[in-house]
Length: 245
Ligand SMILES: Nc1ncnc2c1ncn2[C@@H]1O[C@H](COP(=O)(O)OP(=O)(O)OP(=O)(O)O)[C@@H](O)[C@H]1O
Ligand SMILES: [Mg+2]
Image (cartoon, rainbow, N blue to C red; front, side, top):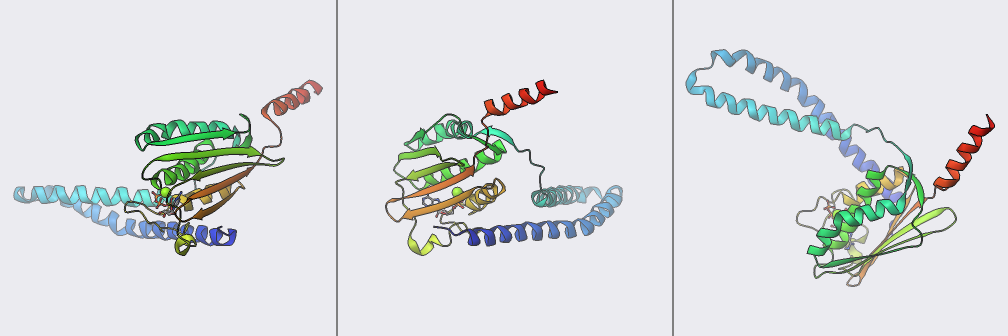
């Protein structure tokens, strides 16, 4: 099981990486702007035979510009819109999104929800990103196909979603590296899926736990605080307040 302190350290590490990237991108921009400016000045004096080198330089510089802009945008915090949303809607949306891929991988997604209503205060697309990351990990760990179980149940204050697979499982010796930024066992993995997911869950005051048995499978459990009122209650109390005025 991952401990919260470790996840916090990872979050700080990722933030430091983002800030470093933004810092470098920012520093590159000044010399870059002057090179770009001088190049433009020279444009009319370039000999015909060298014109093709000149255009290569221009397009390569444009590439540097777009990379630095992307790095800067990555580190910039984005404005979030938190609102009451229905968690089962996010889950079903994600399952639909990934159903074609699951089918291709011979994976059957089985969902068991205790209710079709579980309101949480959240950003729909970011929660979806978490579920996509977790479900994709599960599909990638079940090479021969199989069943993915998604269960959702509510306690008084929490909604708990668990994802269990009978995939490869995670060996004990790498369990404590899972969730470290850039730690991956996959050839084309970035090792950021779980780090990003953990950060999003944290922003929603939720928790994530991973338990795994090598050779047997993995269970990822995610919980969020429930929005105290159901939509109906909230609407009723709003109407009530209005009629009092
Ligand atoms: N359900 C799972 N079963 C087995 N191993 C898993 C599971 N989920 C995660 N892992 C292990 O945790 C590692 C990190 O996962 P994470 O999602 O952060 O990155 P990734 O999947 O390797 O790369 P990316 O998400 O960028 O494609 C994986 O490489 C894999 O070894
Ligand atoms: Mg992943």
